[in-house]
Length: 365
Ligand code: G6P
Image 1 (tube, rainbow, N blue to C red):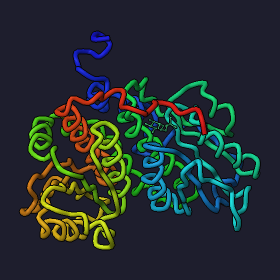
Image 2: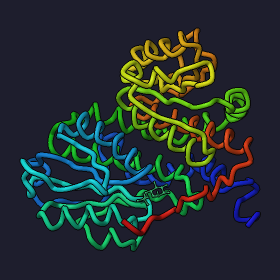
Image 3: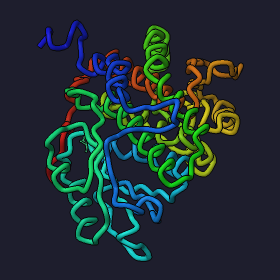
Image 4: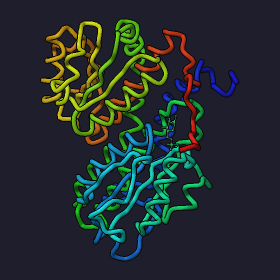
């Protein structure tokens, strides 16, 4: 067991640190930067993408948050309406055209019963289905019309880490591919996104090199009564994922929400004992988010922010620097939140790789 953990005390920390390499695998041979295109080895019937009315993403847990990130990329890069449903809640629903709908199931294991149920309902409605998964030969791959593998390698820790990063990276490539195919994305714009993706493994490595700073922040703020994670735009799914990671492994109360919602309720819970963690990067409407963070600080809450390199917010108690990689900056910020969750939980001696009551793959509905 110790040998399999490669010198790390937990699989989760090992897998967090594997992200530069797993992301390289995700991207390997798939980016054609000079042409501004992507080769994911997937195909659709002629004209299908051009006529597409909606991409509907279905997923659970961390994969659902990867889907929330991706939906914004599909709208921005592929010019197509994109919605995300919690798989157990998904129904084809009214007002939609099956043969102009692509249902994308995001599932690390490919075995989650709720997600398979959603795929079956989509197939029964006559929609085209697609899977984004880590697992070759998994059940989902046999039930959909097409699959893209995220190639993150096996993940043992119950709390998903490297697979989230690889899911978002794969979906970002799919968004570029769909955008190019539909003529919605200019080559120059595609090139800029692909360069950001190329920079992703190195940017994540730079964050990992700052682990000591996160360890100290976890020590200083880890005893909070509750933790609030906020962001806007691409920062919202990262805030939600950051809160999920912390609650899963530390058993602390943690909530993530759109920063603008803070004043519509959660602010009532903010005290000097409720640290606020914010995504303040590109793609996450940082200046507006910072205004909301300030509202929490006014009530005494300490504020920790993941900030784009080159920006400064003097009032933050802790500022984690995120390298400049455009549309994937929030994804890089997420690595700080993974490390924060890990160190808070580790300081409390929690069963990090096997949190109570949770399973890696949930095969019951
Ligand atoms: C379980 C795991 C989560 C995971 C979710 C969806 O709840 O504990 O980490 O995000 O299932 O799993 P999937 O394999 O479909 O991505």
